[in-house]
Image 1 (cartoon, rainbow, N blue to C red):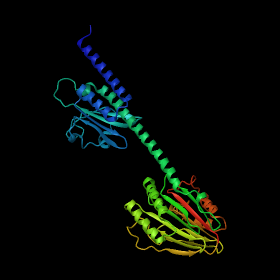
Image 2: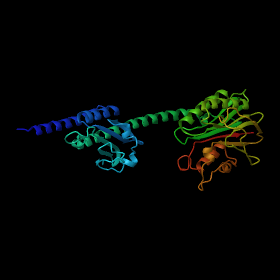
Image 3: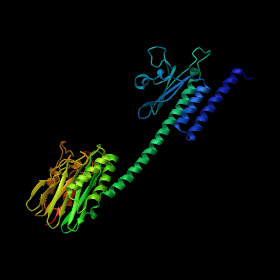
Image 4: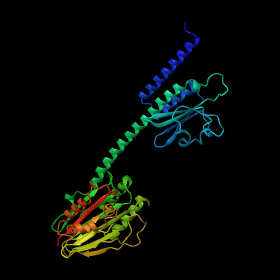
Length: 410
C-alpha cells in the first residue's frame, strides 16, 4: 500500500511533468516572450513558492528581462560581467553583507551552444520557515524549466530577428531597384554629332548616396551634373533621391546656374537639417557657341582634356556644398570655350580617395593617365575602372563610385 510520502512524491512528479508539457505546449503555440515569462514566473512563485526570481539574458548585451519578488535595491548594483560570468555551474550564494548577490540563494547559469545565454537568480522570502527551502527542494526542476524557457526565448528572438533581417533585405532590394531607376541608363544619355555622354555607377552597399545626370535643356543645350551626399546608407540615399527630383524639376533652359544652385541649397538645407550635405558639380554646354559654364560646389574637380593640344585642366571648386550653410555666401560661375575635340571626366570621391597599393589616394593621376589620348570617353572610363579592379577585385573599396564622362566634338 502506498505511503502518504510516496503519494506526495508521485503528485509532485506529475505536477513537474505536466508543467514541462504545459510550457512545451505554450512554446509550440508561439506565445510571446512576455507570455512565456509570465507562465514561468507563475510556476516558480505561485506553484513552487519560490520567493524571488531575477533573470539576466544576453542578446546584443546583457539585460534584466525578469525581476519578480525583488526590491530594486537588491539587484541594481549587480554586474553580469563582474559578478556572474565566472559561474559555469549552479552556485549557492554565500551570505555576506559585501556580496552584491546576497539577496539571492542560488545562481543557475543557462548555456546555449557552450556560450552563456542567461543567469537565473532565485531566493526565498520566508527564511524562517520550517523544512527545506523550495529553491533547494526543486532546484533541478527549476534548472530544467529555466533552460527550456530561456532557450525558447532566444529562439523566438533569433526567429524575429531573421524575419526583420529578411524584411529589411527586401526593403533594401526594392530601394536599390528604385535608386537604380534614378541613375540614367547610358543609352538614354545625350549622344549626337555634338556630344557623347556615358556613365558608371557602383554603390558601396546596395544603395548609395551618389548621383549623376545629363539632360537636353534645348536642342542646342545640355545640362549635366554629378553629386555626392556626405555619409552612406538609407538616409543618404533618401536625401539624394529628393535631390534628384529637385534637380530634374529646377534645371531648365531658362534658369541661371547661380539661381539653380541657390534653390538647390535651400531645399537640401530644409531636407537635411544640418545633418548631411551634398557636393555638386553642375554644368551647361551649348553646341553652337561651344561655351561650357559650370559651378563646382565643393565637389572633386572634374578633369578636362583637350585632345588636339594635349592639355589637361581641373575644374576646381568655387563655392560651398549644398546644405553646408543656410545661404551660400559666394557663387562663382566659370566659363570655358571648347575650341577643339575634348573630354571631361567627372567622378565622386569614392574613386579619387581610393588607396593604391601603398595606401596613398589615387587622386586624379589615374584619370589623367587614361584620359590623355584619342580614345572615346567610354573607353577611358572602362580603362580606369579595370585598372582599379572595380567593382569585384578591389578590397580597398570604401565608398560609392560614380563617373560621368562627356565628349565634345567640334
